[in-house]
Image (tube, rainbow, N blue to C red; front, side, top):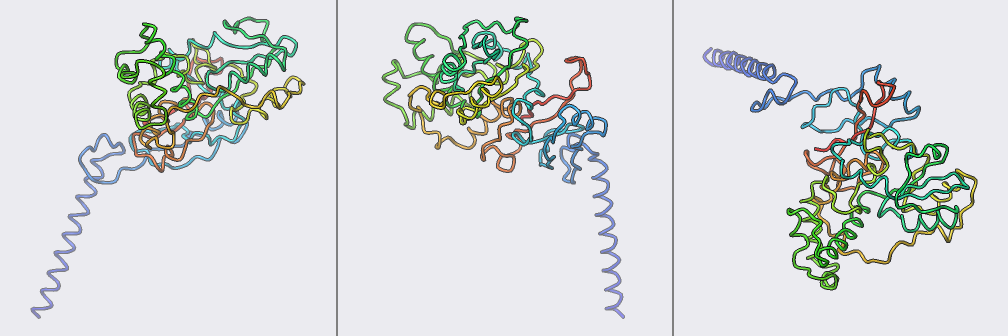
Length: 376
């Protein structure tokens, strides 16, 4: 009998303890509410916010694109409150690059200094009604030669972008993978700033001066190519640069160069080619206007400067920083992230996503949705 009573007592106490624990957990869950910010100390699970568009917005996106907008993935991103935005990874849209870019919005305030270049350099072919936008470090040297020799084009240092006479021209440009271009742009900017400093000019902000310290001449800098020192300086630059201060044309991001600096809306591009596929890109441009292009002419040549540091030794943390700095190019130009920057390989706070977001007052159709990057 004593054993029986002991067992009953244990069962009753266990039931009470389980009930008390359950009630505490339920109380904590209620205290948490749906938002993580309302529960900074409790350990209860917080429901993930909604990541789908309302039905009416879904129709707008499909109508705007008239194509597959890519698979919506459930991704862990607890530090941003997604509500009704459609979130996707860079490079996942199943559309031509120019069509993705047409849906982009580039903030005129945030990227203000990146826009200043977009009225300077272009080439125009009157016979073929073709308009080419220069983007520094995106095959522009080769492309300008192709345009002048292959399309009877004319190079302009001050591009007449707003002239009504060019509304019927096809608009094209060549773009580049954002990481590869960031490396090339840094190398070019470093050399040009070094030359400016030697000439007595100081184009860089004070908080970046240490990147150039210790190299009094270009020859001294050249002695350190592909050493730990040049790698250290690149990583220091990537982590110090705010992504907004532009002191050299070659570090301007690509999307702002191809967008209106007053509205943030993209130019109406007919085709965007790729640096790493120059021959096919220029063949496609030629097809737009019925012109064949000499393969030897359109083969990528570029300038024969060596890379100043070994890009394979760049740390994942620095690479993730560069992905965040160039997020607008990854999203608006539909380039996939490198493996080190994929959400699965990147800690929360360093991840890059893209989203569809509704912006009112930019176009006649106030229901239009635009692509913008989300950076943790």
